[in-house]
Image 1 (cartoon, helix red, strand yellow):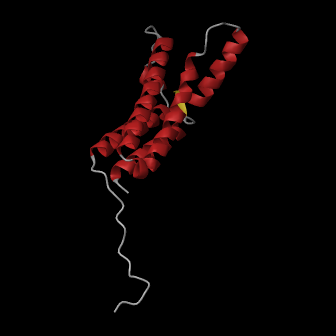
Image 2 (cartoon, rainbow, N blue to C red):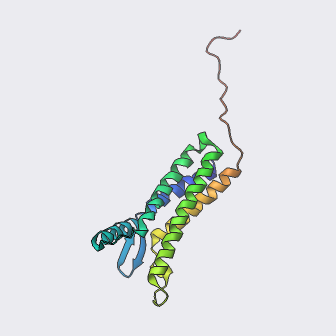
Image 3 (cartoon, rainbow, N blue to C red):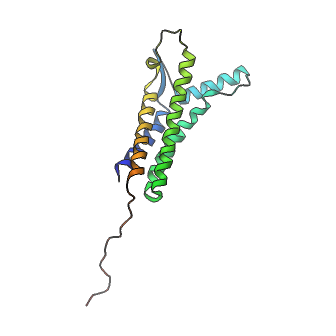
Length: 161
């Protein structure tokens, strides 16, 4: 298996798992992206506000991780198009990470003494690393020459003269 596919496989698997790791951590409180989406949904239902949940886009993160994993597995049959789809999946995952960062930055405001990087949990950083790894693997895979499966020579089953 080529290194680019391995990078995409690891990036996809780790990116999907990062969804359940703490993305926000302050003192003894920590929330995964899954928790943040659920809590935000619950708060919207209680508040009867007509605005939609801004964290619903967080569902794209595990979907992007699983898609990256699937496209990396399919790269042997799909070729370069699988690497292009892996690139798109990695960019989607990184987009969610950036969106979460911007939303958290705006919710903390500039008047607080808390630095944004001090409240970002391990899940956030793992997701960044995973999708960057998938992105590098996809770019590297697009530049590789396609390999064709070469049949191994076999001996005929009938006796030769």
